[in-house]
Amino acid sequence: MPIYEFRCADCGKVTNHFTRKIDTELTVACEHCESARTSRMMSRFGRSYTRADIIERYGDPAEMGGGPDAYRDPRQIGSWVEKKFDEYGMDLPEGAREMIDAAREGELPDAVKDL
Image 1 (spheres, rainbow, N blue to C red):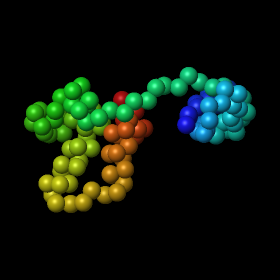
Image 2: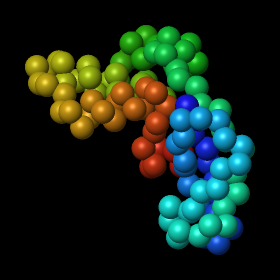
Image 3: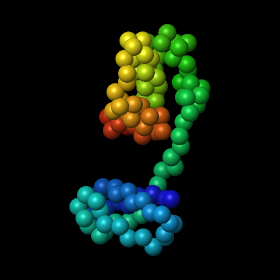
Image 4: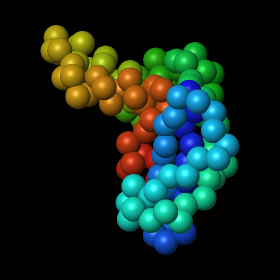
């Protein structure tokens, strides 16, 4: 099921459109300014990274002292947070769990995306 991206000619912002079928003749209004002057963009290819992929690329935080500085990728920070909550015997809040899982799938918070 494809997700298409459209750039608005009026406001310049991107609108995502989910559809159940491949459709080359799709017209989508801008979700920001409601303009009909949108054009389909070439979407970036998304890839999920496993924990092993991240460790291979950035190193194993456990072998780097395990401190916060050992976590060089946002997807690794979740491991550090999980470890700390476990050390203190606390349950990880549901909101934190959702952010960690999203980061592992490549959906990073806006503040991190801009780094």
